[in-house]
Image (tube, rainbow, N blue to C red):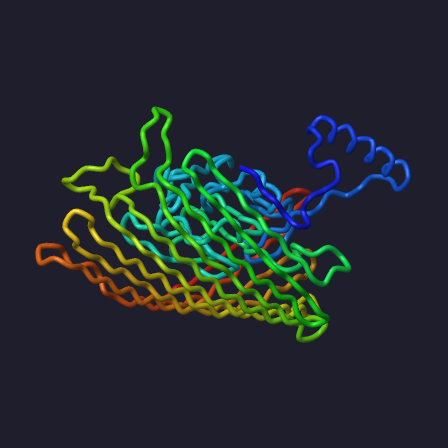
Length: 403
């Protein structure tokens, strides 16, 4: 795959890795002689709802940054975690159906979030990850139970997806920029194009991005085509961050994605005419996210507030007889939290509330009727991290949920 970027190209980018390594070593030695040892970049984790360095967390967490994502060139969000210990990609080879398996648990037992907003769509063998990996800034995977922080769905762990921001694409002193990336995959004749334009002023950072993907069926190792693996997808994102005051900011983002293709009812199983039919699927997602953050003057008051809406719609038609399915879920959620620090202890407490409206319609008199339901949840939680000794932390969590 070849990619072209407007600002990511560096001098000598075409030189082999050996030469780059030798050049880098010389530069390191010279800088170390002049200025002393250079500190490595600190990896900050947000999946625990406390922004702390990865080295200080008490949990087993995998963090995949932007540079590693671009190196992997994943076709789906789950594929970004494919090389991490205790994590596997489930759902078969079709990227749009893939999911994350953490230590043997997957599906409704592994929760996912996008920019802190809960993503809870789960319906049979249908897809549950709707974010294009080109929009990712980082992916964080918590291995093991995270229910005390996130409630239902986080028994096996958490996959936190963080989207790109304007400052991720702008160097210091720059106020306008962007990138254009285009690639081609010879196996499935896949074409990928992504573009983003970013800018910032004294009080506002903004980003507008869009992507387009189109591919035919994947060719397997035996030369056969993987039926129902071709698709067409496009979407985009707008993100705006206002600096209301020196220590306050307000961020709004909107994402939309459309996908169209033919897939088996169960994409991880063998296609047959008896139970695993080919269907035509059109899916549309719309996501709205509004967040407010205050960095208090004291260590005790650092509140955050978030409101979000997720709208997922899937229209499916069985190709053999034209029978139809329509599945839709809308989620309305709010998060309110505050973090404090005292004598080395970190404390987080807050309230979660969300409502899920699930509506499904099926054609055909002899088919079972899928659920049509509403779920309302509100929760209160608290988390404390206590330093016991050097390299030893104790984490205590409590949560109450009302369904």
